[in-house]
Length: 116
Image (cartoon, rainbow, N blue to C red; front, side, top):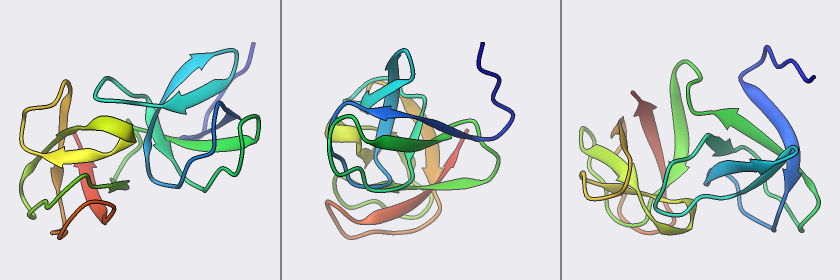
């Protein structure tokens, strides 16, 4: 049994991905990009290829997290899930989970989110 006391979780990625995208646990220590759905954490570093190591910050970690926006988000907006591991402004996604702590202009921008 693997015991994890840190808010960082190591595993293996199913595909290449950039950092700060939402990911979900698949099985046996494997992580994949989350779509507009529930997720367990946020990828902290770029992954170059499938099978490479991935470091995931648990979404329940204290403090805020950096995530990637799918469009414009204003500080104070509710944050919800979006496609391709990104986040969107509002409550229209499958999982509404936080509040934006920064304002961003558009797709691909890094937004600071307080996960509640």
